[in-house]
Length: 248
Image: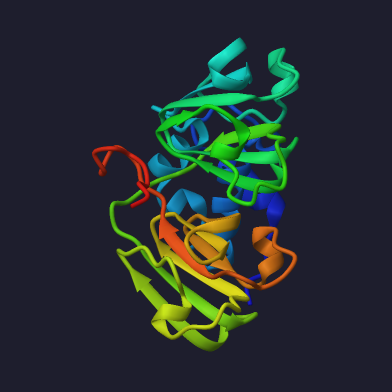
């Protein structure tokens, strides 16, 4: 087990030429710092500072949010994470146009609650980005890091990477059952690329995003139970022509 000295870690993060203090680091960048330090990969400064600094700004990401459905009402164009859309003079988000991305939306402010993957394309109303259809609220957003055209993920039956294991490489799996794996996924290792898991087969239900890193327990991806029944890759137009997942 690696003991994390957060004060030293954040000091080293601040040493990157980002122009931000450690307290201002984006959620995704902080997650990356946690992952690579916890994995014992050494100081961030000895790893890949260019990639880390790029994630802080996530250049090239652009999204337009509209207050009303069908791209009506007040709108705001965003290029960086937004922990509270009401600070952008919008009461709510009624529709979305993703020019480049992908992005991750959250049900509540400060990147909390149900997650919504937003790849390049148009979302005219809330049920076009929500697979669970349980909430029409989207109150915060951030860009998703897509750092590779390759994808590899390990799913484990039990917490702590134990029990039955399933490896998925460069493929989308609409049903884990069809591949001989149960619906219980309690820990995950996302080794390459960014993935999204779903509660139910056919990419339905609540969404859980796995950026590159290790997740020892389902609480780490904000789930209240260890249930995932379908998994797919999150695409980006840098490597995929349309930059999004297309249903058949």
